[in-house]
Amino acid sequence: DADVTQTPRNRITKTGKRIMLECSQTKGHDRMYWYRQDPGLGLRLIYYSFDVKDINKGEISDGYSVSRQAQAKFSLSLESAIPNQTALYFCATSDSTSPSSYEQYFGPGTRLTVT
Amino acid sequence: KQEVTQIPAALSVPEGENLVLNCSFTDSAIYNLQWFRQDPGKGLTSLLLIQSSQREQTSGRLNASLDKSSGRSTLYIAASQPGDSATYLCAVGNNFNKFYFGSGTKLNVKP
Image (cartoon, rainbow over all chains, first blue to last red; front, top):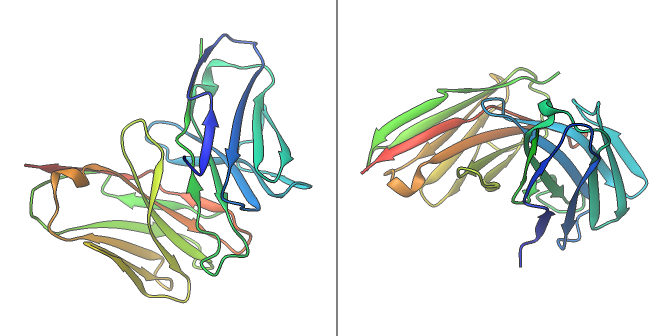
């Protein structure tokens, strides 16, 4: 089984709808991240969480919210989806206590299309 | 804000060739640098992680170097194979555990 899983893997939704993307990890890592990837732009950080009670905005948090329900679960919500939120979304984890700390591990991604 | 640039954006080479991918960053106060591989429509696979105190890391045919003072890292791929075709991303991590990504180099290795 994959260490970092994302659901759904693909989603098509309409403008104005609320949508939630979910991320779960079995690696026991304390830190979790949400990124979006647009063609030719690399990955940009949306939100990150260093533990259940520590959530921080990234570069492009407007229009998004997150919830860290447990150490293993980190969800990303689009309150009212708009077409320019069409992108590939990735969840990642890292372990601050690891000797090779801060290495990031990624989920398989969620392809979101907003029509 | 850290800016990460990868040049070239795309590269096509014949099988068997040795090649170098480049990554540059504007702020030398980094904690680490990580190289990833991404296949079309897929997630990111970690290739190599270099801590700021290290100069290079090796894994099989891959060698990554880091020169913090000049704000550069290179990924060297020896004896390239068609299976190496993918997009290669570098990510620079700071002391606050935030990462900044380049836009990637798309590599095509021709049989």
